[in-house]
Image (cartoon, rainbow, N blue to C red; front, side, top):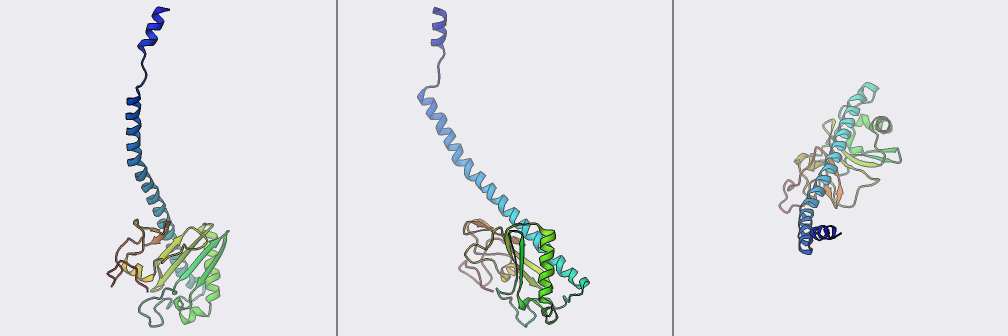
Length: 214
């Protein structure tokens, strides 16, 4: 019995000071690692959104190329067709998917005179492409058309874009968008996908960091 008591006394646990030191070390490591891990998650979400935007951009370009084979005119399909050298913000195609229902809006200024005559058919055909081939459930995208092809896509995984100034046609011309938060692809705390991916920078002709209005 005496030997057992001596053995129990010989066993020592952590002292209070040792526990405090261990807890402090864990707290320091957490303070370093947690923001880093959150950054990785955010970067991954932006990369995924940009990839989706790129896929949609390719889908729209394939659709435009195939319209001729279906008897719909694409010659002259260009947002600059009316003599406007800079595309207006409204000169875009809007694709919205909500509860698996696809809605496509084609701005008149993006269509040639011949294409205007079959505008409804254009929209119907593109809705079929998105419904059959694309596969997202709830999302909205602005697609900018220039020179007969889609030159830029702004994508958001939601029923409607968050409030704020979104990238526009001229931002794709410049290759940058000054309206991002501290991280590229984040606008008002929301993840926005772009294709080509736009980085934060001063818009052309701007010295204040605010985005230009096409």
